[in-house]
Image 1 (cartoon, rainbow, N blue to C red):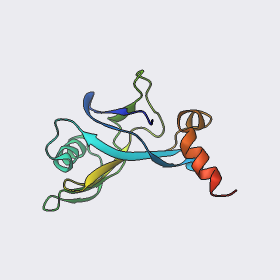
Image 2: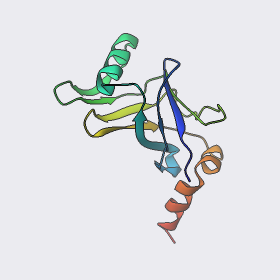
Image 3: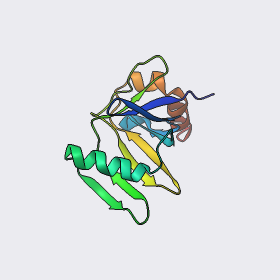
Image 4: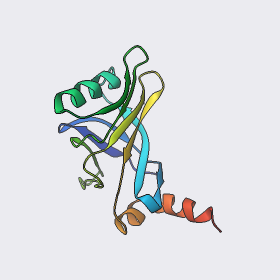
Length: 128
């Protein structure tokens, strides 16, 4: 069973993800976010990005839509507290009604293949 990864924004736990998808050669891991105590994720990320001067690719409050650049204070941790590090931070894309996905870019190898062996295996099977 795939473990849950804890997601924090500004040091506060906002949810979890299984990081169930990715692009192994690029060191990308992503997954659906299950929020805790967040009524409008799009508003939360809009305010966080605006306050930190982070560019937003797309935002439509009427749709509850947001697509962000990397947010340095958006962090992902394993259950043992180890941070899943790639580029500084992670990005968020989604709709309040349909759900959100978190993406971490540039996770180095061999850590990536050790942490996400199922993603690497699925990728390798495409070519065998």
